Length: 188
DNA sequence: TATCGGATGCTCT
DNA sequence: GAGCATCCGATAG
Image 1 (cartoon, rainbow, N blue to C red):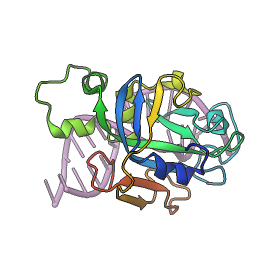
Image 2 (tube, rainbow, N blue to C red; image 1 turned 30 degrees about the horizontal axis):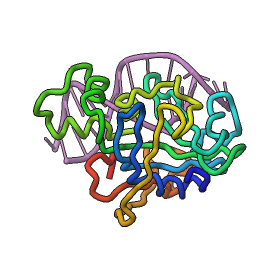
Image 3 (tube, rainbow, N blue to C red; image 1 turned 90 degrees about the vertical axis):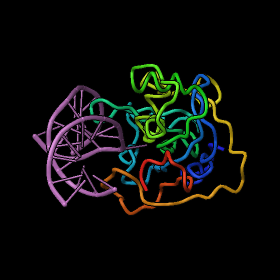
Image 4 (cartoon, helix red, strand yellow; image 1 turned 180 degrees about the vertical axis):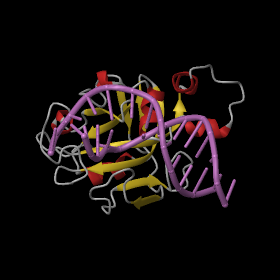
């Protein structure tokens, strides 16, 4: 699964369930980044910060950005190649109360507003906060420690493809994919 | 509903 | 010193 190219992995991860210590949901939106890709953190070669992207496929790459947020990726392709997939949105399935507490710093009400449930995980930094992912998780491995990926069971989900969000270089490269109609997708 | 700016600190130029 | 794979609240329409 993780041994594919980053665009292949980005599509394959849609519909899969991502769980961190049993808390998480269905992956609804992803973006691919490759070493030859000007928008990628790995474009200018390996550094201490991006080393996880060059590690074994399935390695977790967590980075700090905008002075206050972290985002998570899974390394793709093969060891030595700086390529990976950013997880941009999940549809919560397990541990809703725990996610709510981490995101909003208060217990989840008995009848939570739908709008608020969507805000739980409809963005790359939001879902990391909800799942309790921090920089300490950098270099973790999928399906070995607290991170688990349960492959997509439904073969026929409708997938949309667009340009990536929030980048300035290689802005035309259509390497963002999301599940059509899913309410947790961060942007249309 | 859409757009705008502030928060906040690490990384690389 | 500039830029950043973002988020949130405020403001205008």
